[in-house]
Amino acid sequence: MRLSLICPLLCVLLASACATVPEGAGGDLCKQAGGSSQLQAELLFGRDINGRGPVSDVERAGFMADVVTPRFPAGLTTWDTRGQWRDAATGKTIQEDSFVIRIVAAATPETLARLAQIRSAYVSQFHQDAVGLLLTSICASF
Image (cartoon, rainbow, N blue to C red):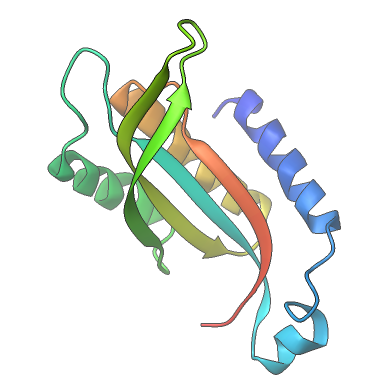
C-alpha cells in the first residue's frame, strides 16, 4: 500500500473529525435515534478504459465480489452514474459512464486502509488515472 494514498486519506479523516456536525444530525439527537457517529465514504469509479471498451458489468461484478465486498461485508450501496472531467493535457471535457459505491463504516485507520486498497486495485486492474473519494462524518442508524 502506498504511503502517498494513506497520508491524504488520514488528513481528510482528521479534518472531517474536527468539523461540526450539522444541527439535528449528531450528539444527543443522534443517540436518541439509535445512531452513532460514522464515516460515510463515496467512491467514484469511471468505466472507460483507454485503448479498449468500457469496464463491463461482468468485470464490475467480479471487482465487487473479489475486492470490495470482502473489505466491507456488512453492506454498501452502489448506483450507476454518468460523470465528466477535464483532461489536463488537452483541456477537453471527457464524459463517461461511471458508478458510485457508498460505504458507511467506523471512522478508523483500518477503514481508510481498506478504502485505499479498493481505490488502488481499481486503478491497477482497469488502468484508471484515479478513483474519487468523498468522506463525510455522519450520524447513522441501521
